Image (cartoon, rainbow, N blue to C red; front, side, top):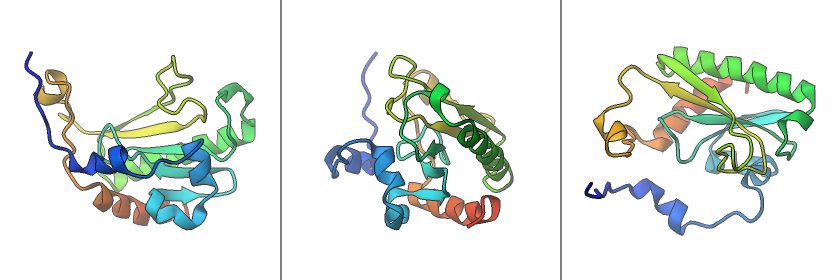
Length: 166
């Protein structure tokens, strides 16, 4: 199979941008004044919700506890229940306000479990649409991001104030 190149200028920051030292999620948790730059949709005393900067599909975000842990089993049950309540609201927002036909929800626990950031648990909400997987995804192992990330962030940020409170 011939390797194809898909130009993706939005990933330039990933390659050349300033790297965050330590846990990226702890950095986001402790820098509330940078929420817009960090693409935070919502935060409260237990958790924050942040857009996945390199999403599987447009609108992909994560619910993350402020408490740094890699072990779901050690998370305070009250925080886990709170994350679950936020997930319900997030699914509702993605369906009603973003037009998702379905939503994948999941956690990859540990490096072996597929976590990209294994040291701090996080719950993914990935909106899905009929026919969102096509030949380029299935055959060429390439994803096409159909709209501007910043535009989606601002749309979901405005919606999150309604669905999560502001």
